[in-house]
Image (cartoon, rainbow, N blue to C red; front, side, top):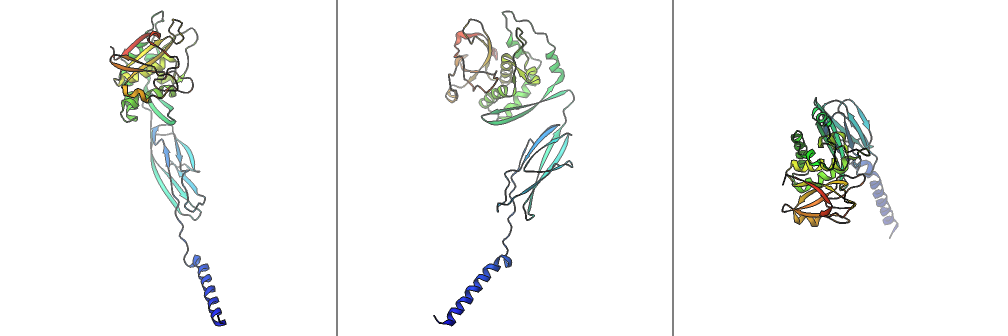
Length: 332
């Protein structure tokens, strides 16, 4: 190769490098906008309403740091990937989140928040529990006068005559319990089997176990247990059975002897399920089921201090000789 050819090749190479070097200036790479991923829970409820705003899954396609700004729709603002804000007054709010990258490219989303006031004559109770690791939240309005009516009722001393079934069939709170049961049934897709499992998880997880003082026996009506948020074995079993009864699901309240000393010492429930569903029950130990009224009934333990008992699971290995008394709903 002669000197002229080498010189021309060098000029071409230098020119190519110059073109490549200047390409970023002459043809700048466009900045990609951030991607906004938003979760807001809950979006409606009663005041004061605590709402969790979460945009932590948002990202910049180029991997750059983002700034996340919140406007809660009532004049208050905040900065951060996840924030909790309490709406104190009823009304409709348009909350807005803006995600900004270092070049100033921004994406905004708006979400509606509805805050209701508690109606006169009602108490608000907010329940939280888990089912299969999934969190649940449920707000109930409880009529205050009806609660006080039950709270003021005299309990008949139990002397060899335990009338736990009477606390289920008392009719005064039937419309209210029916409303609650329908609300829970709607939450699980209007499916009886799912409703049974959800109701059991609710009573076990949302109602705090609290035994009666030593030497006393003071059963609660289901509305009392909901309003107070706690109860012992008979209170939680009465509540569970009352919810099932409201949806016409065959169930029984049972007074049982768990330690084989001849004296009943515990209250639990039984609920009818299809025979084919027995194989789907998941218990590490024994599953207790009985055939009554041409149906298969499985045990449901409602009083749980810690953890949970799945439907059918029996920590005592009960047989029919251990069942001192049964109350059936509907009556049979």
